[in-house]
Length: 223
Ligand code: ADE
Image (cartoon, rainbow, N blue to C red; front, top):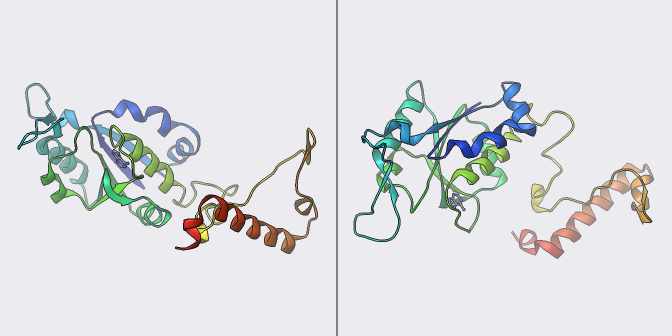
């Protein structure tokens, strides 16, 4: 899978994309992520990529021209699914991440300042938000989206992790996990996990997941 990220701040992505599971996915050619500086596509002699909003108001708006030309360079060799990261988008959830993980070629556009010229929407397929709060730009949301969808790309997680038994699957939070030692400074692991009785362990985990969800995210139970 190929992901191109259009941004005014490509330097923000370096550590995140090269470390841990994303770094391994890139090294294994499961996921190729490239960042592109929108400013490089500006036809303005000062490489301007933003300007004052028509009608007045605070802040700057990202201009259409550099984005159109940068997008054209990304999609020149074939179709791509184009996503704008913006607080007004659909809230990111596992279903959106899974669907996007099936795309051959994704282009992520990071909004900045007061937003992007609305005419850019004619070259965008969908808008995604990572939550009901406003960040200074779409860069962190793009990293969150890449990390979240990478987990659904076959081979990225390897055998040691799974997306089947984690929070939000079946609308439940994840059950508590423990590792060795069984007694840590007097804090004991629940006896049942040491019993080796698979069915009882499954039932315990289910009831723990329900209990955690009731306490912390009761809204999930009434979805
Ligand atoms: N840009 C600024 N805030 C954002 C958010 N919450 N989600 C996606 N993009 C954003």
